[in-house]
Image 1 (tube, rainbow, N blue to C red):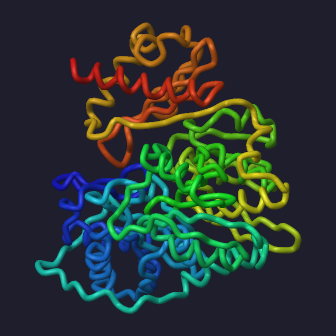
Image 2 (cartoon, helix red, strand yellow):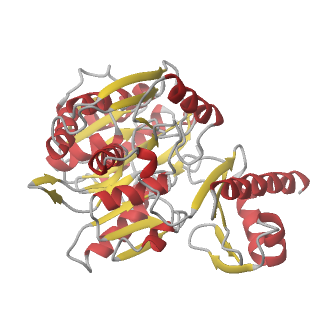
Image 3 (spheres, rainbow, N blue to C red):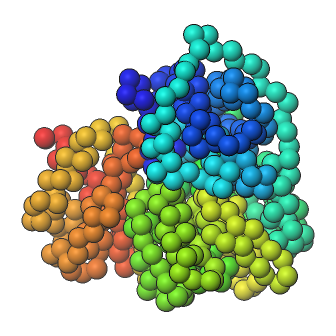
Length: 471
């Protein structure tokens, strides 16, 4: 880890493909097997559609084989699908994916037999001492075992019911999402007509927190050209949804989270600090908890909340990834817990809610409080520079007001849960945080109108970029 610079980010090991050598992937896998999976003889492994993912998977499998364990190769499959099946067979899992980050980067996510690993378990992996053979005996990837695929499809078809989406026309933006085929299968099994759009053989880095300008323009153009009830897609490994209404307008992930939690009739909600405060203002839920950014922190918050209440606890992130903390029963049908980010559950929940309410998808959020968020990032922004900027702004309130939101009034609240999140006198919020996965500085803004939130975000990043250039 020290020599390669490849370490744990917000969720999983991430880094440049050029640095993810066979030896490094073998070492991380061996450390995982020695610590988190020490008592298990069967390991599940799968990957996303990045060009580098099969090669990395082969190095990971070599470590599994050398440890004397058996393995199930699930092939290219959504991260939540692999996590779900692993929980069903009580097996640890490795998932080779870089999620939403560009194709020149990749990573590995680790799951214990009981779910996504914690930050404490990450430290156990990092503290392990492993032997790396002089020549790693890599093998060709075997035939795909489709049991995980089938289990994931059944999970949703059995809960929501065949024909539930009958009469709905859903546009599926396929790009390079690993869910592009399985999502079509699920939607069609539920009765929807599916229109395939934008399939790509090259990797497309869809970031559901910072939607690309071309995807915003393309979705609106598709809505004008085709008549559909919604347009849906996911990021690369399908643990984050991107849902657009009948006009091709993408919904913010933290609004999707509120709507999904409402549809599931959750009582308690756990979210990262970056999420829209409409969650609290809506008063839809008995309790809400805010954590640091990253699914391990949300999961820890959900577990603590479940220890206090005997009712449904859910979580979501600003990227729209949804976590189901306990089993959910509706009309005699049970949806088993899946406490890891999932894109399919919020997609299906919003489509069904729209159907049940006999309204357009765009109308689902109309009764939520008028709080709107926008987010973007400065790419190729060194992490050390991000931390230096935040330290300076935290120490100098006047400079922070001038740099982040000069026309929003004085700072009324400072939140250091994760990065620097400032609330201003007029209610505007600006939150800065270095990415845990790449050299990027992220900005989250919140205001009373969508235009104001976007202006806050854009202007803040412009000033930060200029400030960094002059430093």
